[in-house]
Length: 598
Image 1 (cartoon, rainbow, N blue to C red):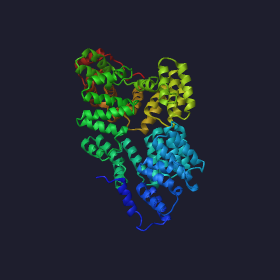
Image 2 (image 1 turned 135 degrees about the vertical axis):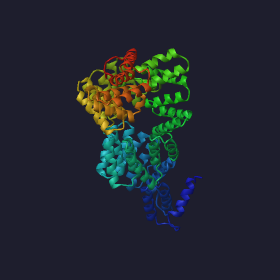
Image 3 (image 1 turned 30 degrees about the horizontal axis):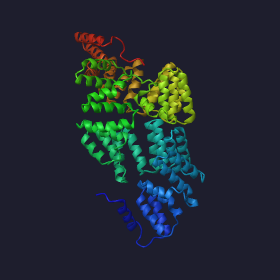
Image 4 (image 1 turned 45 degrees about the horizontal axis):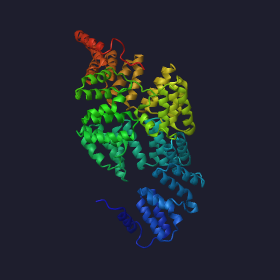
């Protein structure tokens, strides 16, 4: 049975200090040591001893507020921090803790005001500048967040929280390998810091270095401290290896810590789906889609969950409009088509299955509003202060061809949010839609200083291609893949350049990698391109295997039929090849390169 906070506080009062009343100085020193190791209950016990010893409230208000924050008691923390009554030498510390309280409560403007009061006392501490950076990031002041963490590192180059935050920003901007260097640097001076170890382990996992990640998580468990991240990372590793039962047990050991996070919902949902519990999986995917309405992968998981749970009408009703988009994934089209088939409407199923068979990989249009954007406009369209409203409104205008009006709305948001990455990307989208690829790249490069994800890289590639600079486009794709080697979509993007140049061995290597790490067994186009690259490289056996896998993934796929026909011809089966060539022609694929025009 879990003992109450009152029990632990009483135990701390009885055990943390001698039975006789401790001297105020000793009590304060004990409290500071407890706060330094993150033990809020022990710190509170020591501070109450200090109060009993006659220490005035303003002398201990900041420390008591921090102790309550560590314990998660926001109301109690506000009793100590809210009045702002701190001793003169405690004002910097006190207002810093008040700012942390306001951040935890979601009062971001009040948090900024508290930081201003703290900085009026002094230049601040490294820890304070890290918190200022995190506040700025939450306020869409992304470039100013980077400036804040640089201030923190100037004040204390070895501060673990500053290095942790800098590494997190580096992971978003430069990539996984660069971030790993930051976390490794922090661990040299703070080898037992749980926060740095957790980020280091997670980054190792994303890089595919499973053994190294497992070693770090075991060290985290040895150190203790109540951090459940080690068990979550081990659960994800077990799930990736196919050991679902072990993954479930490890996930259970995290308690409720990941129940409302995107990563936790994905892992729980996938495990439930694979273990034959589609109803439970659907609950996780539904919550995930609520948390991340702009995440296309989250929407696909939701559709997959509905289909697995037998809600075929729900799949059709919820995702038909998304499937109408030209960049709809073959997987979503197939789900809708099969839902119609199961419901007995083959006529309605046919167009979706036909599109799925002919689908080629495309980059989503930057001007598309999307379902999430339309919902945002419906809910908050009269709120001029929301960035998501601005993004949706501008893209809606672009979609309607109102370029001038879109530029005017964008200009207003650029003034209001001059340090926002989201507005940088939107500015690039407007420029790209208007045919100003050079102007788009200026905005995209600025955004990439803070957040360079694959979506942004794809847009930069499109801009470079508009300018006719294929080398720069390829360099962008290859650099992103170097930093994110386990990203299957990035490998596919790099492979497209190799296919276009006729570099068959490199194309084969990249496509095989994309197949292995990116769910390529469900992508008939990728498998067909892999077969083509292998055949051109002289590897007939690999080409045949890939083409057969392409047909198995989508029997009505023209590229798959064509790829299998080519391998059959190479193997001497001309009659079988001609049958499949005819089928490929019926499906709209003739003797032309299978690589999609981009």
